[in-house]
Image (cartoon, rainbow, N blue to C red; front, top):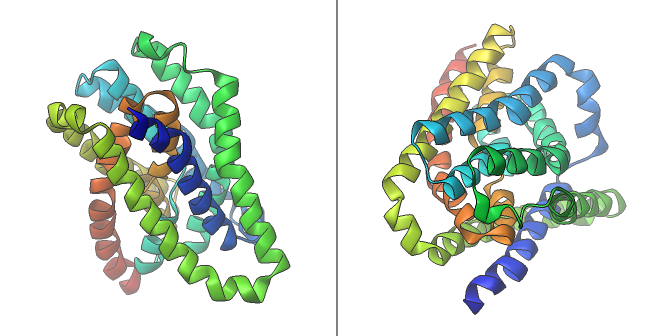
Length: 287
């Protein structure tokens, strides 16, 4: 369909570029230097993001016996970096917001490697033969680079050059980014509405399971590593709230069916992460 091709080729990349530029407007070099200042927290958080989350997605896809393309889409979502909303929820939960921002920033850069890698591994593992010709490692790397790292760098550049002006427009930019995210999710569901309805039970169950499992495992690992509640809160929420827009954009550039798990996951992640944030607010406040 012409509408689907316009959605995948034009609207999605533009929307994601705007969202990533808005993220860049809120970042400074200090957000990356915290790797040195908070080495243990960042290391545990990134371990969960780049390894645990994708592996959990593999396991959940197997558990629910998802059809190959949907299984690949779930792994793609699991390999996506943390989303900007995780920073806000971490702040509301009185978690370590600086750690959350740093993980979002770094995982957005490492996505250039992790997303193509796990996309290729899952395509092979689940036997999604219809996707083989479209999943090209180099091509995916270039796409992720152009729609994440480049606009992220642009946003940071603008903040550095025009700090006072950016400070004024940043709240509006975040509102626009959130609106675009919602439009992207709705567009992905509409584009594949028949397949969504046919597989809604399995996809919804798998998405919810992945979301809850990721936050539970991340929080548990963080506490076992002797991180405090505020750091553990940040890491758990970062695992629960992915950059679903990136997963949808990359998925749509290959086959629109890959967008379904990320779109459905988005319907759950704010609810579950919000409830977790509310619970941890009282715990972190008491601590």
